[in-house]
Image (cartoon, rainbow, N blue to C red):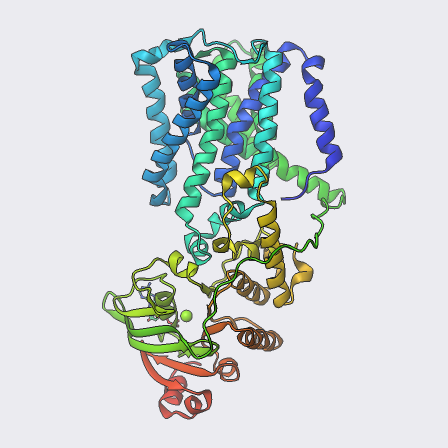
Length: 594
Ligand code: ADP
Ligand code: MG
């Protein structure tokens, strides 16, 4: 996310504020529709573009809110403002329920179930007597702000666009916060989020509810602007139209929601106006022409309106918006854990067994790691190192045995709980968010040490905590010598440096034990030396390290103690020199390609 240019923002706001005075009533009501569409599309930009979950049922949430407020204000005679509360409550609860039922299914289940949901809600509206069946509900009262009536579309215009502006600001703030970093990491998978102590399912559910609430707000505005609701505007076609808006705008950009809503609605209206000039069967081919134009648009501007705008700006040589200045305000450091004293047993593995069907990948392995040591876990390819690593971090369930961490039995805990206790890990196949800055990637690591939630983040009530997080992230980047590149994108780093960046993310969790899976793989000689120096420095600062490696030379010079595995079992354990001299170890390594 780059900071918006103030002059552009100022011009856009002024233009929007003057529009009702400059434009005719047709344009004003089109702009009202665009604003309402933009709210729904904004939710989809977050859910689909940022979070990677597709919903084909967004119009159902718009409909639930519209009908909720319509019903409450017409049949019960209550105020539309109570209608707003009721509408948001109902959309929020529906999203919570459907999200809890479907979000954990993963894969295609979410899109499929949102289709089922979208279809059934539209059918429901058409069949409930109380909701007016297919005729719908009419005579919905207009909104009032104090004594000011918003019955006039020009008055409604201001309410809609102020809400669009506020929603945009809320989402923008949200994405640049602690919960926002978790949302932006959803595409990295649940194992990544669990490794920093976050619950991917919960993050996704929250995001689903936020998107539904934005749709709900749009539905409420719709009901009181049109003063009439019927099932058709909330059916499957409408849901797809909202998705098209998000895609046309550029699915990764919040502003794209506005652009996309504008493009789709202007296109639709344009076709309805122009087509009858050419043919008498305009009504029948309208959607075909729309589809053709939409495909053409996506063909020429694959990244949507925003994607093209950014590309043009780059082509014109305009510098990208300035990065936020690095304010060196000294914030109070984040709270730290009590570290164990040197020699205390930090990790204790007892009789660990893992079977994959008939294959015993880890067979009865026991060893301890003491505070302040670097322990190496080595062995030829296929020895079971990664599997054991996954047992320790609770990424895989153990078949038998026990793992104790800081004296607690963690065998029954989830990966996320173990991470929160202070066991931080990196990945053999790097799991960074390539489109997030180095600083944001590292800041994600401090997730479990901080608390700000969605509401406070969206309202910018997170400033002091955010400063503390950023200061911590900077400190960790400093530790690995990358603070000069804090605002570059992680994806632009060479693979070796990405591995080191993952270590900084793990360090941001203030870990007691750092477990690294093949951190030296793919590194050049110089990089390996730098990594060794870094790990030694960390040990001297009190971090305990367990390192899983394939490269003997690298670990021999680094570690205090070695555990050697072969064919799933522990072969020997001891000081590097003794292990090197061991005949069994030599045989195991000579017998393999290493
Ligand atoms: P290392 O990391 O020491 O190279 P691994 O722990 O990756 O070894 O693998 C140990 C053995 O377990 C190998 O024979 C591998 O094929 C097998 N294995 C690993 N993961 C799985 C899995 N998910 N399903 C079945 N077999 C597996
Ligand atoms: Mg491995």
